[in-house]
Image 1 (cartoon, rainbow, N blue to C red):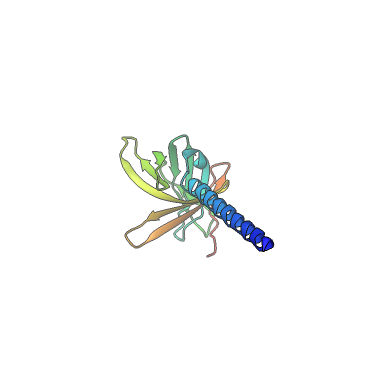
Image 2 (image 1 turned 90 degrees about the vertical axis):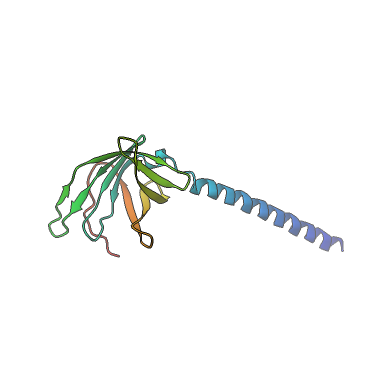
Length: 151
């Protein structure tokens, strides 16, 4: 009987340890998944091109986002860059990048799905039922990615 009591005590301790571990892990996961800062975005990001050839570049520096609108021609491999757009940005508690024009007026919000050292995934509501996802690779210089990705 002493042996079975000893086993029960070990199982109880193991269950408590596992519960504590899970609580700590969930707390750390929550903190990481909701704790993006402007520092996480710093650098130049090249968007994977959309089917229509849009493959924007965005550069985050401090609290400024500079958008280089790129239109790729998949047949020739050439591209054009439209007028550069600068915005101030902040990241809200819902992990959204909020973009503001030079007058401080809100313009757009993009939800951060994930960020790693070299990849960024953003999501934007096109309307009430359609969500658009944008995939980016971190790059060292302003060069668009005009290679069409297969689905």
